[in-house]
Amino acid sequence: MLAVAAVLVLVGTFFVAQAMFSNKKGDDKKDAPKITAPSLVGKTLAEARTAIAQVGPKLVVTEGEKIACPDANVKKDQVCTQNPVAGTQVAEAATITVQMSSGPAKSNVPSVVGKTKDQAIKALADAGFANVTTEYKDDDNAPLDQIIAQDPATGGADPSAPVKLTVSQGKAKINVPSVVGQQKEAAQAALEAAGFQVDASKTTTTNDPNKVNTVASQSPAGGKQPANTKITLTVYKAPDKVSVPPLQNVTLKEATKTLQGMGLQYRVDSGPQDPNAIVISSNPGAGTQVDPNTQVGLMTKPVDPPKGNDTPTLPGIPGIPNPTPTTTKGGPNGNN
Image (cartoon, rainbow, N blue to C red):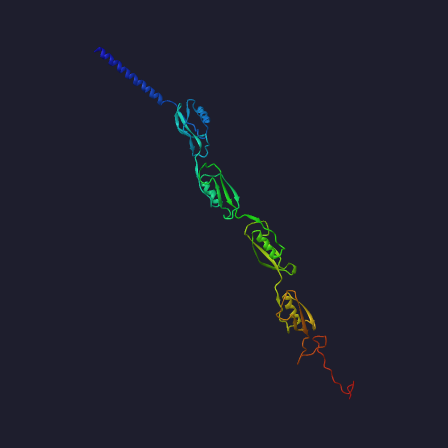
């Protein structure tokens, strides 16, 4: 019995001692000092380990599996994620696992062919692609400023990678030859041979017969224009004909005023040139179509003398009555 009692005492003492030791160990763990995990994102593995050592010499950095990093600011072979995350309270001998970036996560490149340049750039920016370059090319089928090609076309790509857009600058442009001074037919043929359409319906008058039917001006005047652009020519022409007005039985003064107002000249072929003289005919006659500045010959007659009770005037002195001669009987002294 004494032996059994001794054994029981020994066993109890063991468990009590074990319990006391375990509680002390737990308290030690509970009271172990903590440190704040530093931010390692964006650092190389060597930089991460240096940063850890500066925070706590017992901290350990271990590398996990590489991943395509969704953070565009993190480059390949830099820390993309860490566990525990920065700011977490960890034991001074804790292990922080980092995942290094294998490169940016790829995004889907949208198709922008057929859109305008501004629409395409916006669509790419919305998809995360900001590095966009453009080049312009002639295209006979695509309107100006439309996207006709892109590189890369579609599919996944690094958002930081450049996207090249080819933009239409419209139809190919060619030099417009100057045809001013040429005959209308030759000018039109030269422009059509160069690939342009021609409108030669516009005219302007000239008094120089040597310029009639030659090109006075063209629009556009020169430079480069797309093929099939319409070139408008202004061609010199002779002035329009003028119809000689009826002038019979009007005064010379009135006739000359009428002719000059119509752009015609005059001359008196026969008869008095008194402004009050009466026109009896013209050459060319009334209604004849003549060129501007044509000289019209006039034939005149004196104004008709006064009739009836009209008071005669002294010849050459208007307004002074001509006295009626008195018949004297009987000689110069009035005697019979």
